[in-house]
Length: 119
Length: 119
DNA sequence: TCCACATTTCGGAAAATATCGAATGAGAGA
DNA sequence: TCTCTCATTCGATATTTTCCGAAATGTGGA
Image (cartoon, helix red, strand yellow):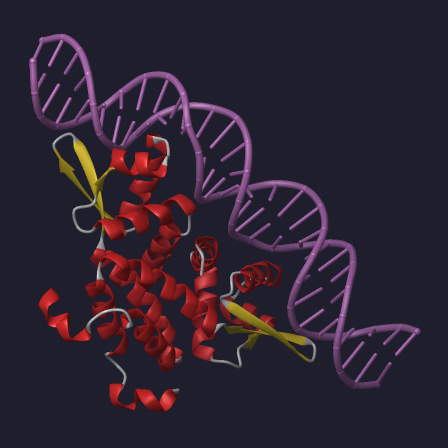
């Protein structure tokens, strides 16, 4: 990932409404939610939300797909992973122990032994 | 870390000049660099850079300290860790395997067996 | 084909952010 | 104290972002 792409990704998350969208969709999983459902849940006008969703999709944070008349948005796991990897790679460049600390916190609540099953 | 703090941190990184500052200071390590040295290295007018540095410090990404007449800025490892943890915590909330993938990439270039020594 | 629904695009105004020269502040040496 | 230097703050302008109602688009059913 090059710098410009990372900046777009960070900008996409650096906004109250968009960060809330992100969190909702991460929890929602691969199926995602229809644009209208997100607007209703977050109480944001559809046109405003649409702008945000478009921006987030352009930044590679969200994926969109059509199902009948609705458009579903879901967290783009690959894109998010790329962004986080870019950030941690930068950090580790100078200070390896930072990533290690982060890693410990991130994996604290899960079961490491079952990691293979999720691939 | 609550939402608003995370947004400030993300905004602080979502800018070309500021991201370059961040990367330079992460590599530079705990000693950091004087404001003037950063301005010279990145070829940014001092007053412009000062605005960015202040913003990044306010967001908890940078630490400042005075040494004689100069003001040194260094990456705030604890603050950055808090931001990354907030993001990965959100991701893991719905999809534990995302963090695991990230973790593998982040630790790929280091020696896992010596992790204990760095605490 | 015609209508209804879900969403996006348009338009234009308000707010926030970015930029940088000039003025200001504050530390250190003569 | 005077002055030099490093850095910040001020001020004014330019650019970008945000917001949302109204209009347009496109999809599917009757």
